[in-house]
Length: 227
Image 1 (cartoon, rainbow, N blue to C red):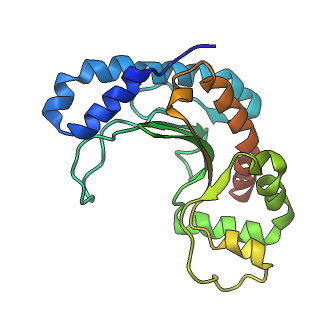
Image 2 (cartoon, rainbow, N blue to C red; image 1 turned 90 degrees about the vertical axis):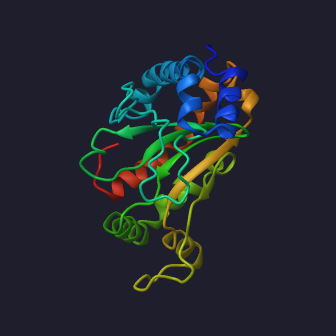
């Protein structure tokens, strides 16, 4: 197995957190490319064969613009925080039709003291959220099988935001109502920075993508997407 990230990768991200301005980044851009971007692109490429076995409709895209890896630049147009760069590296392995409609994805995130892997759909729009909730109400058993299984529960926790009050129009049990109240349908598991710098990273990511796949599959079904 290959090793992608190293202590130098996380050292760069820590330094960026302490020097988050354009002049510093310009002077250290080569460090970013050598220790973060290029290793991450190699990791994404190496995950593609395993991803294809999980779902032929999901893509590990190596493009540096519009591909799986998120840009290092932050969108600060509507943000109160005007720092220009993200201090973490992340990628989503997305559905082939994600540009045509909102879709769940597989996700991996690497930040100093903040590494995790998971999947799902984050902040879906109102129409997408409406469709997922209606599907949950009509297909509760499959959802519970996907998110309450021993394989899932041993590693993942559902996260994100939820409504405070029960939405109207749903006659479901209290357990399922907690899921219908969700505004995000995501699951994640944290892991150590040291593991991210080891040859255990790839097998861990592949294993966790397999475990979260039934949930991603369910969300695809709710949106009439192939999995």
